[in-house]
Image 1: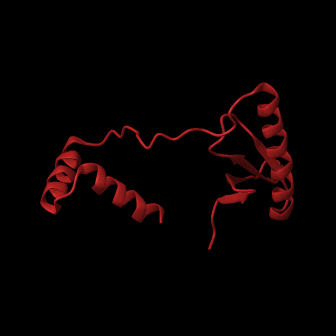
Image 2 (image 1 turned 60 degrees about the horizontal axis):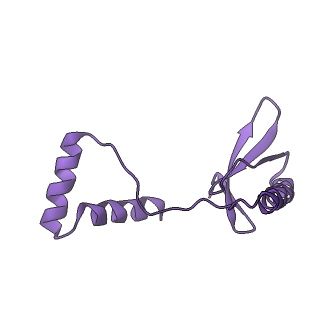
Image 3 (image 1 turned 120 degrees about the vertical axis):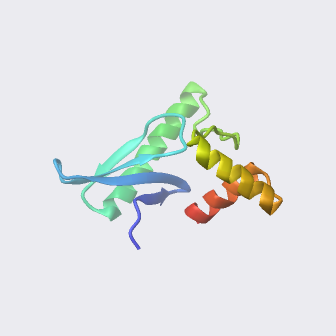
Length: 111
């Protein structure tokens, strides 16, 4: 299975390949700032990721900044009004709220 996500010490990073410099680039997600790293192999990417994360966390500690983003569980989604109507009707017919239908769809999509 191919994925563009790796886990470095419990923190997810999105991985891409930059053909111009012929290196993998990864950027942590879920942090309160940017922290990216590069390497020419996946194994080295993990090594560089640990270094980058360590530096980021140390800097946050020095500056007394919370390193991780807070997720409230709420977000706004803009969809076509006809889709909104269909979701609303489907939710009502299923005895569910729109929130429950959307949450279930996202869980199914993400896995």
